[in-house]
Length: 223
Image (cartoon, rainbow, N blue to C red; front, side, top):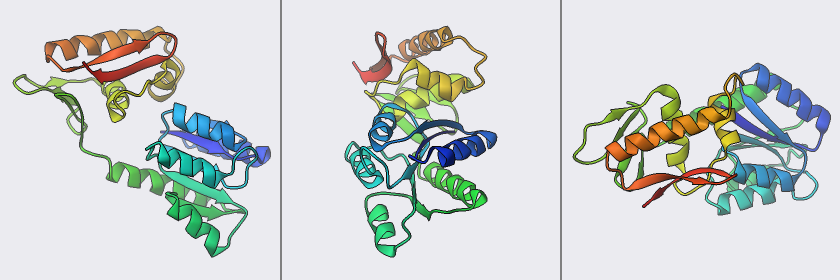
C-alpha cells in the first residue's frame, strides 16, 4: 500500500513516515499544499494523510481540487483544530476521516487501516477498457469470444494500475514503487512486463492498447 503524507511540521512528518514504513507502507512526504496537490494528482496512492493548515495551499483546498479532478483516493485529515465545524467542512469536501492533533500513533494507524479497508470494500470487482475486462478476484483478463487469460501477480498489479484510470499516464517510478518496492529489480523490468501484457491484449483481440509516452510512462487507451 502506498501513502502520501502532507504536513508542514517536518518533525511530526518524519515520525509519521518512520512509523508507516515500519508498518510496511510505502510513503511519500511533502511539506506544503502545492506539492501535496501535485503529488496526489501525479502519483498512484492508496490513501492520503493531509494536514489542513499548510503553506502554499491549505488542506481543504487541496482536497477540493483532488475531488474536482475525479480522484477518489481516500483522505485522512490531520489538524490542530478540533471544532465540530472544521470536521464538518472536511467531511463535506470528501474527506474519509478526521483526527485532531495531538493524536496517538496507534490510533492513527488504526484509522489508516480502516480507511484502506473501506476503499477495498467499495472497489469494483472488475475493471473495463473497451471490450477488455479485468477480473480482480480471479486475476483474469477476458474479451467476448475468447478464453480468459490468467495473469501472474505482478502482471495483474500492473494491469490493475493501468485499468483503474484508463487514459491516465502512470510513470515507471510509480510502477516500481508499487510493484517492486523492495528495490531489487531494475527499471527495465517494467518494459518487459508491458511487452508481455501487450502480447496478451493482442491474443485477446482487445480494443484497447497500452501506449508509451516517451520519458513519462504508460497508459491504456481505447484504439
